[in-house]
Length: 495
Image 1 (cartoon, helix red, strand yellow):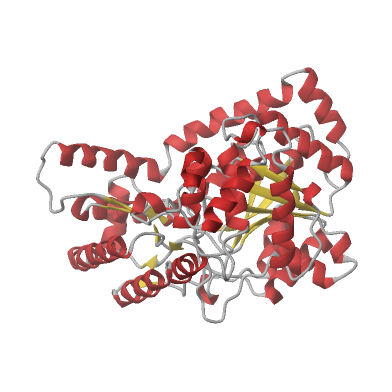
Image 2: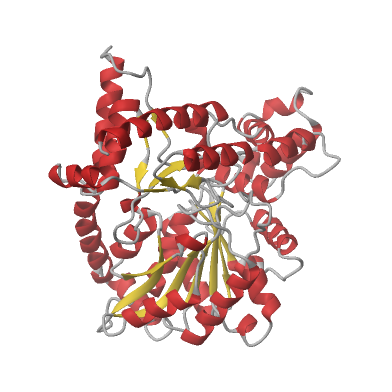
C-alpha cells in the first residue's frame, strides 16, 4: 500500500547510512523539549517535591500523596494475579515445582514453559523469533476470541510492550522523503505517549474529535472532516483507533467498527487498532469485538483488502504487569514482503524478555474451568474494577460542576469540569492551563495527583481531568473523598 513504493529504498538507507535515523533523532530532540513543557511535567515535579517534604516531616493536611495519574495497577495496591505470579515464580526458581503447596496446574504450566527454553532456564537466550510454541498458542487464543476467524502465527510478533510495537509499525508507514509529511488520524482525547511517538518519527497528527455528548462516540462524519482538514498539509496514510478508549472509557459497537472499516477502505487508510483494554469492559450493554473479527465478518472486498495492525499488552487490562514489558502486534492483509521487513525490523532492535513471553502465554491462556486455579482466578477477574467504576462515576457526577460520561471500559475516568470564570482567569495569571491549575490545587491541598485534560487533547473551551480506576477500592475511596472535599471548596472560593 502506502509504504510499498519506498520500502526497499528505506531499507537500503537504514542499512547503509544513518540518514533516516538522524532525522528521527532530530525529531526526538525537538520533542524532548516539548515534553519538558508538558503540563503533567509541572505537576510531577511538584508531586516529587511534596513527597520529599512529607518524608522530612513537613506538616500537610494529608499524610501521604496518592498518585492516580497512570495506569500502573500494582503501584496502586492492586494485587498481582495469584496464578500468574505462582507460575512465574516457579519458572524463575524451578525447585518450587517439587512443592505441593503450588496447585497442579501451576506446576504443569511452569514445566511446559521452561521446556520451551534452552537448558530449561529463563536465563537462556531466545531466538530472535521468540518462542514459536507460545506464538502458536497465542494464535489459537486469538482465533477463539474472534469466533473462529483464522489467525496465522506468522503474522504475530511479540514485543517489549504494545507502545513499542505501535511505534515500529508507524515507522514503517512514515515516508520522510516525500514532499508532504505522512499523516496519522488520531483521536481526541488520546494518550500522550502515542502522540509523542507519531511526532518523533516525523509524522503529522491529524486530530479527529470523539463526541463527548454521545458517550465519546467515534463518528465517521468527524473522520471525514479531519481528513478534509489535512488536504495540502500532509499525506494521510493511517487511522489510529483506541478500543476500549483511553482516556475516554468508551467501547465501540460492532456497527461503529464496521463504519470505521468502510471509511478506511474508501480512503485507503491503514488501520492501527489499539485494543490493550479489551479485557476491561464493564458496561451492561457493552461488549468488546475486535477489529479483526468485524473485518473478517464483513467479507470481501473489505476482509481481504483493508490492512490492519492490532495491539495488545500484558501491561494493561486485568493483569496489570507493567514491569514485565510484554505485548504483541498482529498484522492482517499486509504484503508478505512488508511482513518480512517488519519482522526483521522488530527482531534487530530488541528481543522480548523470556518472562514477557511467559506472561503473554498466561494472559492468552488462563486457567480453564476444572483447573485448580480457576475459581480464584475467575473470581478476581470478574470482580476487578466493577465496583470502582460504579463508585467513581456516581461520586463524580454528584459534584456540582462535573459531568462524567458512562465508563464502559478501559482503566480511566475522564470527566469534564466546568470551571468558574474566576478560576480560569487565575490560571492564566499563573501561566497555566485552567485544568492544570485545578489539578495543581488538588495536589497542593489534598495530595492527589491526577492528569489535566489538556494533556490528551480536548475541544476548545472544555476542561477535564483523568484518573486511573485500576486501583484498590481503598485508594479509590480515598481519592474520591479528597476530591469531593477539595472540589466543594474550590468552587466556593472561585464562585
